[in-house]
Image 1 (cartoon, rainbow, N blue to C red):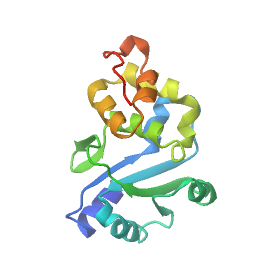
Image 2 (cartoon, helix red, strand yellow):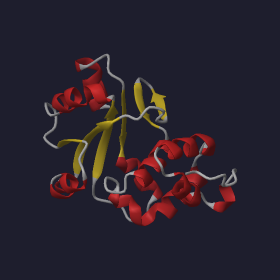
Image 3 (cartoon, rainbow, N blue to C red):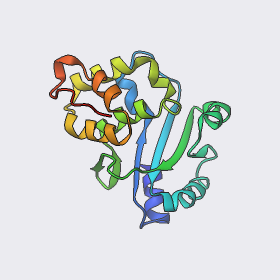
Image 4 (spheres, one colour):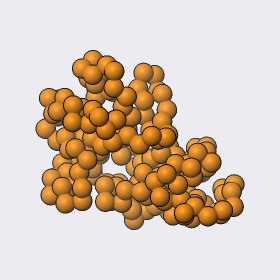
Length: 171
C-alpha cells in the first residue's frame, strides 16, 4: 500500500502491478524468510520507477538477473524488485491498487525460477493449495502461461482433479 500510494503521488500516470511474495507463503509448507515486493511497470518508465523507489527503500533492484539476485537481493529479508510488466499480464484492482491475479503469480513463479527460487521446491504443493483454496481461471492462466512459454509446465502442475482442459499442445 505504501509503495502504491507513493507511486500514485510521484508518478500518477504510470501503470503498475504490485504484489508480494509473502502472499504465496500460505500455500507453502516451508516458510521463506524473504518477502519481495514485485513492482511491474511499463518498460518506458522502469528506470523512473526504480529511481523513485530508491527514495523510500535502499533495497530496490531493477530487473535483477540470477547473479544480482544471488549477490545482492538475497541479502535482504525484504526487497523491492522493479521489472517490466508484460502485456496481457493478469491483474486485479483492489481498491485503488492494481495487483497480480493469483493466476499470474502461479505462472510467474514457474516462468522465472531464478527470481522465485524460494517457491521452486514446492511448486506442486503451491498449485494444489491454490486450486483447493480459491477459484482459479484456468483458461486465463494457461493463456498467460503460453505467453510466458511455460504452458506445458503450468498445465502439468494443475492438480488432475481440478483440470478443466485437455492438453492441446502449449508450445
